Length: 310
Image (cartoon, rainbow, N blue to C red; front, top):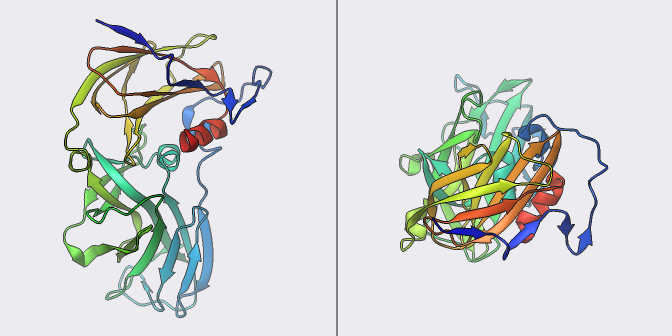
């Protein structure tokens, strides 16, 4: 078996934007990966307004939510009036998807995303739904030309006590009665829907990269401070918005057989002796190769910045 150490294309997280940072004296502060990622995860935007008037607002990622008057109802179908509260968050960047754990996966298969969002509305603490005959719209900015072939997906929440990697499984919409996707401008994707919860503009990865072939390979993980079993590893594709979990992690090795042979980044992070360690390495995966990945002590926010700007 050929061994390839990931020297070329490898970046340790102690060097960000040309500035060297020393984390060696920082106190140990983490017991698990989720508590570490939550420090730098995208935050929920919460707004309150009169349901009879509707509203338009933007979240911290620049996604705009447009809600018509009288759009909400109780679970028994009664249209509500008065003050309502909406909580919304969108995941447009790869780091947003990874840190939120709303991964681009449907029934164990990768999806290419044009943006995800979460939308919840309540009144006096009680959950509301979208009223019959109503829909709201969500405008998600794009960093490049829109893909007009995207499909609408809705997220089913997973039991995080069982599934430690993702909080949601995506299922395609059953027809246009639940919503639709439009692209009114070259850099904007608009989802119009009557569903709350997790919503995604997606396409199965093989349709986006039909010439790709899945590869089987291994990551060998090291650090100057040893390794632990509190490790997560992901493949993030360069040309499409895909965050794929590499789940087979044991004793400092990651084995994987479901990543295409196209340019991507391996993102690995771990909790070692209570501290956060990470690495990003750019590769075109090839079957049979062992990639050496040396994680370095850093912070979750530094990792997030590197993923977005690599």
